[in-house]
Image (cartoon, rainbow, N blue to C red; front, side, top):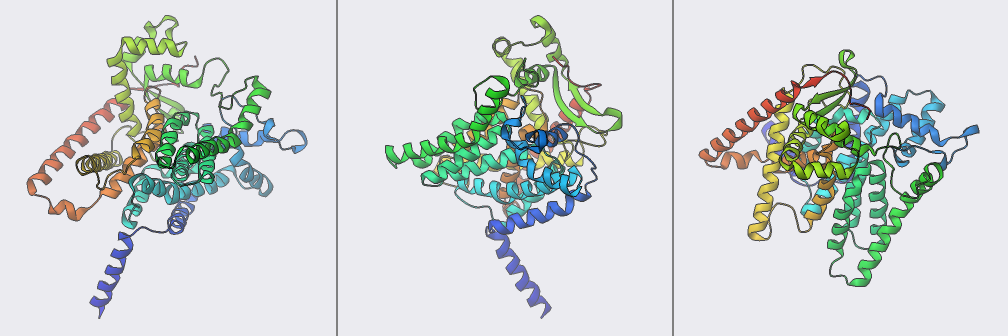
Length: 476
């Protein structure tokens, strides 16, 4: 009798794991996971950038606590991120809740939206098939292992990515109303993270792909609806910029002092340093950089000791393409090489590789192999288990912001879209039964290749850790 019960239960569990789950189940499970974990994660405040966002949420309230969007005046940050914090900021003020508790409530909600709804829906839209329940659970587990403590804080990386993914999902649906929603979400994502402006060409191509064959009229209506939805988000930013800074642009000005764009500063820093961490470790509190001696020498040789314009950097890149390419490759590795599941490690040492990073390398290798196998199958047969038609536009929307982050001083959160894509692909491609069914020589070759990748990642990570320098980036 017991054996029958176990078999019945096992069969039911197998069927549950083999089919896609409703989004309500997924969101509820992720919300419960992070709601249980975040209060126990050990943090007690919102430091650095997270604290700045929380402070900016209060600037919407002028004298006599009068609320207005036009009270907001920040050069570096768009208005929408702090605006989304206002309800929780008011609640914390009224109840005496600590700021961190409010941020954790919002973080759990964003985690549920990203892992429970936006990510799986975008995967289904791009590949033409939904994640099975077991694959989704594995993806959520891997995301928790590598990114869990980011949701303690009011940083905008995960919210911006969630909104971008939802924009792609909306733009894949028929009708101008969905296009308007997609435009609104797309504009919201680039206001949260200005570098997502580079997602616009991919999103536009994605919209075109799904509108092809409808004729000029429906396609034009969808394009106009997208623009209208984006305008709703961008107009307040244009008004803020014109009122406070005299610039009639709907884009975030993205400068911290009005002199140099922050991205140009980042290009300077990314030439002299190869990695950045924000540390709460008392022995290395604040910004911690890992040097690039070759790049630092090259930067010192530049007139004035820095790139004063994008044209100057472009000229340097044209004259030294191999050096810039190699630097971007190192930044790509460093951006994917997660040493901590948090943007603010409380203990910086030991630096470099460990059990977590080794697991990370293996998962990323599996994810990349699964994506490449899918592309190869589709190229051979016009179909397969890889990305569906038009997925290239979605990859462009996600990939261009990642590519733009490679020349700058990289933080792991800048490569969040690529890392989560590879985690999801690894979870989708994880089929132990198929592995054991392969010929022994293929298994041996794969294990040898994996061992070589792990060894190489270990060496590169250790080399980066050895370049730790005292102090933060120069002010320029």
